[in-house]
Image (tube, rainbow, N blue to C red; front, side, top):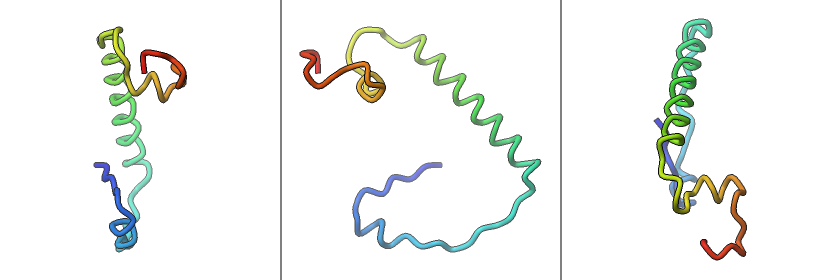
Length: 71
């Protein structure tokens, strides 16, 4: 899960509560499996996506510049 904190007020209210130690050999492999699947899914979506139009990934990936008319 990811959480986005937009305001400074919300960010200032964050506090660390606790951390639990977990067995690295068990959870690292689970993390790597999730990461691998997420990357596979992402690349599959890229291949299936429409090639026309402007996408945030094009702008962020520096494939476009601010002076291009299509922005």
